[in-house]
Amino acid sequence: MVKKEMIAMLLAGGQGSRLGVFTSKVAKPAVSFGSKYRIIDFPLSNCINSGVDTVGVLTQYQPLRLNTHIGIGIPWDLDRNIGGVTVLPPYEKSANSEWYTGTANAIYQNLDYMESFNPEYVLILSGDHIYKMDYEVMLDFHKQNGAEVTIAVMPVPMEEAKRFGIMITDQDHKIVDFEEKPANPRSNLASMGIYIFSWKTLKEALLTNAEQPGLDFGKHIIPYCHSKGSPLYAYEFNGYWKDVGTLNSYWEANMELIDLVPEFNLYEEYWKIYTRSEILPPQYLAADSVVEKSIIGEGSEIYGQVYNSVIGCGVTIGAGTVVRDSIIMNETKICGNCEVYKAIIAENVLVEDDVKIGVGEEVPHETDPHIYNHGLVAIGEKSVIPKGVTIGKNAVVFGETSAEDYTNGSLPSGKSLIKAGDKQ
Image 1: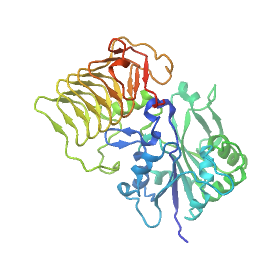
Image 2 (image 1 turned 135 degrees about the horizontal axis):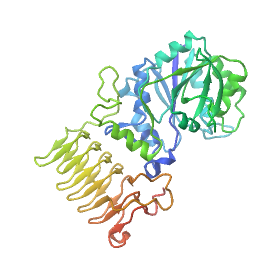
Image 3 (image 1 turned 90 degrees about the vertical axis):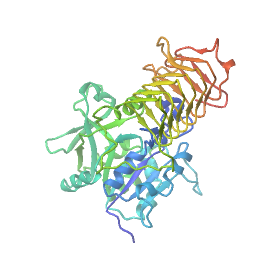
Image 4 (image 1 turned 45 degrees about the vertical axis):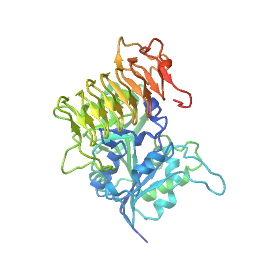
């Protein structure tokens, strides 16, 4: 029987509804990030950099692009005969087929997969955060303390603590209590949703609680282990960690990559971020193009001006076009003489000549101000923006639009234009 010291289970089924049109047709972990990467590349790269070579990726919502991206794991050196990366979608059972109903239910449905490696430890990860972390250091901490469950935590400002699951610890980092989104937090150590379980403890907890509806780690498994007296420890992480769950935090995390001294460095030799790369020619900058403080992906052609932006692979920016403070994803074409300010434009979008995006007064979005805010313009994948139109701030466009869709050639700030068939 194969024996692995620690295997990882990576939860990548999330819809990420707060990312609006960007996750209407693609799972959040498969969303582009930092020009050539996708969000899931970060936890997968952490695994291989930490010596964890067996990773089960649990998919659910819109898994196609995620499955294609991961493939057999070659970019992360996870194409192994024993272990490697395995995509684990929910599957039909003879008795009753069921979707994953909660984070722990997804793990429970894959007990057989974990059992086949007879691991001593299981690392539970989420597929939608941007960070670098050495899980081996966390495992050493787990062993040294004789822990049965170790929860990665990070200090957050006290006023933000009420948004998180909060751990209360003694001087030896042992968890004495925890509170889910407390109104009056007693600590500022927020759970990062990264857990190491001793396998026996995890298995017993999953089997005992299997019938709980929406079986969840924070709500059921951790409290159960605590009530049984299992030693729970908090492993404090002080590196860079970003939840890119909202459009504004996603935009900010991309913009932080182009700081003069980026807090999160994609170029570190000893902690590489791996991804699936298409074979693309180098980027091309035309004679009168201007590029300042930006990341430009492979195969992109820049004929206009790009300032403070993250440009994906295979993107074209036409002559006379100015792009500022924006994220432009792979294979998008912005034609000539356009102005683009503080926009997030998804993959395979066509913006025709003389279009202005992100101009005018900022107005709250008419139906989803909790998603579309901070003046950002969102344009969903494969959209077409016709020649000469103007799009305001906090506006959303999704679908193949034509000139008739714009009143007087304009989509005002805070409005949505979602074509039939492109549900949000």
